[in-house]
Length: 150
Image (tube, rainbow, N blue to C red; front, side, top):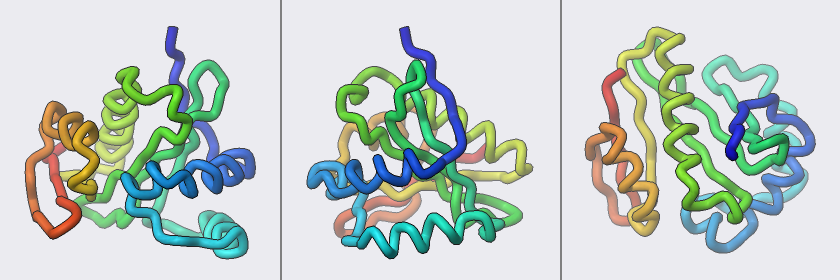
């Protein structure tokens, strides 16, 4: 049985994110640019000062499996992002729960919409977003932007 929790994104998640985001498949699906451990640590250290960025680690039965958050937060909307880095948890319906939780967190900020960027090759994610009420906002060569009213 799954028990998904959203926890503090700490040094453990930072280290796992190094591994997850350097996996070639995940890197391609998330469009993650190359980064160094030093630049990752600088980014992590900057989190405490960011007011338009919220991040959580995701656990399943206490096992770290991914990360998610809201960024580019304005008075009207925000951008959702998230990934399940532990591939053993792919295809188990966890993504829908992550998405719903992030939408609820956006609603507590009194935002009117939430948007996301998804690579066109990430067909499973696109299907998840469509199934959960997101619509095409902008289409680019490699990715699309989808939006949902809250």
